[in-house]
Length: 231
Ligand SMILES: *Cc1c(COP(=O)(O)O)cnc(C)c1O
Image 1 (cartoon, rainbow, N blue to C red):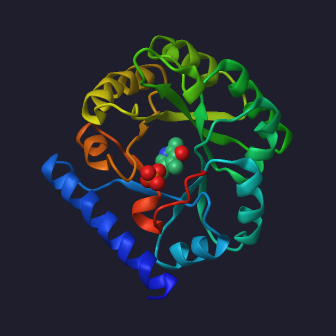
Image 2: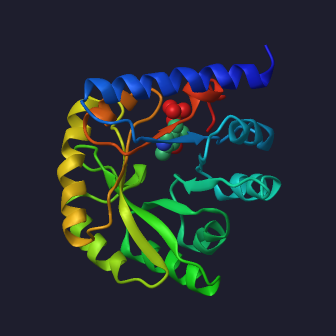
């Protein structure tokens, strides 16, 4: 099989899983599929775009920036889904249309500053840590601190708060974790009414995420194949 045929069949399977998850949740299928292209080359991004994918996700600035440059002719929405250091914030603003991993006020400030300097406004999601107890090293804001982070980020020029993002604890029960995310997303909408995005669910748990209100799923290996162990 050619690479294109492989990707096409992975994509069809994931789209089918999404459709079935929506049906069993009694939801209309308005899920945005973000294909996570980390570790995969720009040529794969090009194939995905040709197959109708509109959103791609990357987790490392050093890898994403050149890939984005190679794909500058494609009309794609690029999502930053990896942990982000303040000193990389301005660089990420250059290629990421959506920054999904805002988890502390200082990072919101740094991304906003980068956006203002580049004359752009960036969509951001507030990343929630669903580990119990909270594991800050895995990224994400403690659930109890999300409302304060949201209020802060909503006041930062250059940012538009669009919703929340989370990764299920591992090991753990994704159903249980995503059931805790839905009310947090509701609280964020109470502060910023337009913040309707709920980014949750990956290759192994997208059904659980859709059952609990995900609007965006971030899927890598189920579309592109298993990555080498190092991500
Ligand atoms: C790698 C990654 C994904 C995709 O994971 P798969 O299991 O390959 O689908 C989703 N979200 C985040 C934050 C990731 O780092």
